[in-house]
Image (cartoon, rainbow, N blue to C red; front, side, top):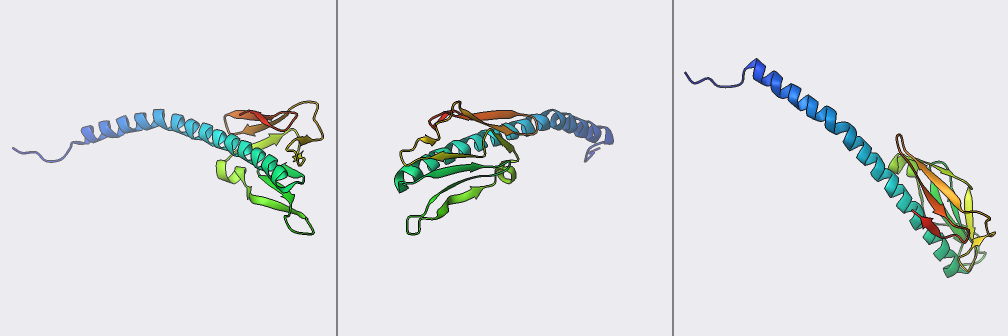
Length: 149
């Protein structure tokens, strides 16, 4: 009497068990991915702030870190005459890439050729990175250096 296959009760038990495991695991996975996206956006913001400082020093002119709700980019003077402002690298669309939005205190931070923020700010600039369930921030101090990431 060799019975092959599974009974309906056995199959129902397996499907219910798999559903319970997915119901527990999916929200944790989603939250972990969101936190990772916020960390990646913070790292990108810190990198672009350092890029703006470096471009200002290297090119010997003002460089600007520009921020909107969903993007970050750096501009500086061109290396050849007429030295018009050009974009350094590519515009990073953090809204599309990381599914987060930015809430900066200021729209742009200008660095002088010494790599120091202009004009000297009275207080640090905070850039909040907002996800669906989590929020974190990056602080750029009065001199223009990322102090908390």
